[in-house]
Structures are given as structure tokens and as C-alpha cells.
Amino acid sequence: MQDKQIKVLIADDEPLVRQGLKAIVDWSKYDMEVVADAANGETAWEEFRKHHPDLVISDIAMPVMDGMELLKKIKEASPETKVLFVSCHSDFKYAQEGIRHGVSGYLLKTSFNEKEIDSYLSRLQAEIKQATAPLRPEASLDVSPELKEQLIGWLSGDGENEVQSWWRRLEKKHPFLRFPLTVIHLAGSSAERLADRMPERLIRGSRLLRFQLGEQGVILLVARELYPECGDWLRKLQLPDEELVTNVRDGLRSAEEKLETIRMLLLQHRYKRDYGLSVADCPNNIVEAVAFMLAHLHEPISAADVADHVGLSRSYFSLHFKRSVGVSFLDFIDKRRLEQAQTLLASSEWRLQDIAEHVGIPDSKYFSKWFRKETGLTPTEYRQQTKIHP
Image 1 (cartoon, rainbow, N blue to C red):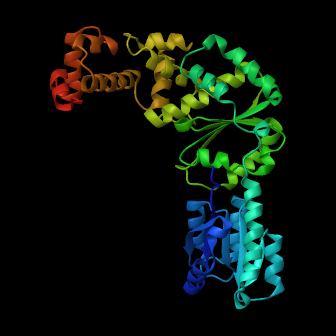
Image 2 (cartoon, rainbow, N blue to C red):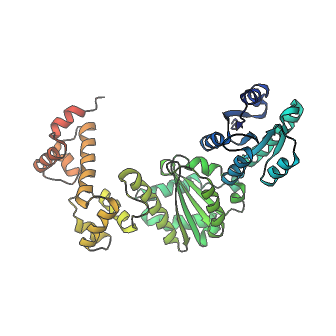
Image 3 (tube, helix red, strand yellow):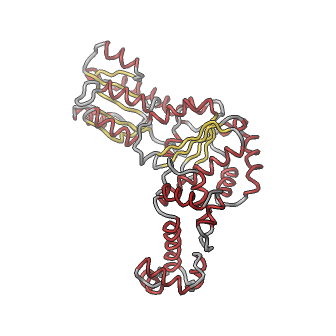
């Protein structure tokens, strides 16, 4: 498999310098590509957050934000990123401060030469490739495909009775899971990419395990003593909220507590994404109530049934459900039933009676009346307008 190319960002307020660097260097020789360039430090920082380059080549003296400030921000957000300074000045003060903040090299614009550039880029290529090389199989962070499939099956409602034995097998393979644990859920557009670029210091020692779950994001199981470092890394990412959502549960001790936490974090994310439930304000019993409701939409369930299932009084459940979800129990369940009915009408040949029963309204006449009230169309009219033809 071909190695991933090293991404390069060039920042300089002189267009000729930016164009010259892009033109005179044979970037492919170093497995590199220039993904962006910027005329000042502030724009460079925006491009950095957008592209997450492995190497930044930056002038020191730039308008809006200078190279030294850019270096500090990059190193705070991503310590593993390499920064190479270029400047017209040979003042030792610049070099000294840059070294103190983690710069990887210092090139003078007045004495650019191919040999010096080649020396820097060859060295940085080797350092970056070593830092981002895949882990050896025996040191992999990722859980085995078999164990991941079993987790997904359990989360989908299969193998409920087998989950404890599944966890024991996981503990046997990864002994740190037997001790106090932190569970971190990463979601959003950057979750998997960031999980693939974890700093090396967090990977060492086999005290971190990762479930990459596609649209559901990434679950990290972290030895509790490692969490402060992991938390620092997450805080320094400085990504927009829509790119990364982080939810953390710390100090988990029993297997039951750890398993339930994993399940709840993933359910909370799903319901936040699909139904607008607030992850921060939604208690576990309300999340559990939503799971029960969705699994029993085909039955004529009541608020009292759901409240009893989660161990709450009907009045307390109704009040807290509306506070957490933003709509009443009846409005929420009606909307879910309507969505299912619309899907079945548009995509299946089911009889109205079968669809009515499937969404928990066994009386087809009442179903038709209810559907028209909700949509302004009879089920037959809706089907005719939306039918998906093969």
C-alpha cells in the first residue's frame, strides 16, 4: 500500500517566496505535497486547522500574526507537527526563541540552496514517517474486528446475555481494562482522523484501546492514569464544535459500569444526532426510555408503560422527558410513528392495516384519520405522491 503523502503548508507574506518554494522544490521526492499557502499568520492558522498539515514552512516576520506566534499556536494544538522557519534575518535571538518553542529548522532566504533544503526536508520526511508509521500488530490500538462486531451486535440488542463473557475476553487480551477506567467518545467529522493521529506518548504502554465505529464515532478506553495526558491532547485540538464532540466518563470500576457507560455514550450521541436530545442534559433513564420507546413503536405503549420500565413515576417521567427532549412523550412518539409510516408507504407494498399495526396503531381507520391530521393527506394519497418506483 502506498504511503500517505506528507502535507505541507507554506506561510510567507511575499508571494514570490511562496510561489518560488512551490516551484523549485521537487516535493514528490520527499513524499510531500503543498496543500495550502498563506500570506500572514492568521490565515496560516486557519489553513492549519482546515488541512492539519504535517509540516509548516513559515516566515517569521508576517503581518497580522507573526511566525513565532503561529509556531506557539501550532505546537500547543499539535506538538507533533514540524515547523521550519524561513527569514531574511540571521539574528540569533530569533533562532534561540524558535528552538525554545520547538521549531525544527531555520533557513535564511538570502542563502537558499538546494543542498540545505534537501538536508532539512529529507530529515523531516524521515521524522514524520517514523512518527506516523502504523503500529506493529501486537501494539495496535484497535480492538480486533471480531470483538468490535460483538460490541456492535450487543448495542443493537443481540447477545445481551453474552456481553459479560465478551468483556472478560476483552480484559484477558487487554489487562489494563480490569482497573479503574476512563471512557471517551469522540464524534463529529474529525473523530476518526484524529484517532488515527494520536500523539505517540499516548500510544506507548498498551493502556489505551480504540473502537472505530464509523458514523457512531470512536470509543476510547483509557487507563485512568493516562487520562490527564489524553485530556490535554483533546483540549489543545481547538477544533470547531461541529468537527469534534467529546464526551467523557471517568473513574469507572466495575465491568457493569464500564459496559453501561459505553452503551449510554453511544445512545446519547445517536439520539442527539437523530432527535436533538441534549447529551449534556439528558439523564441515563431518559436515554433508556427513548431506547425502549423506539424498540416498542409497534405496540400501543403509554407514558405509564415507559415510566414503569425505567423505574420512575408517570408524572416525574413526563416532566423530565419534556425537559430533556424538548417535546412531550406523545409528540415524540407520534413523530417517530409518522416517520416510520411515511417510509413504509413510500417504499413498500404493505397493506394499510399492516402498516398501522407496525407503528402501534392497530385500528386502520383510526390510523388513516390520524395520518391525515398529521400530514394533510390520506395514506393512499401520500403513497401515490411519494411512491418509489423500481
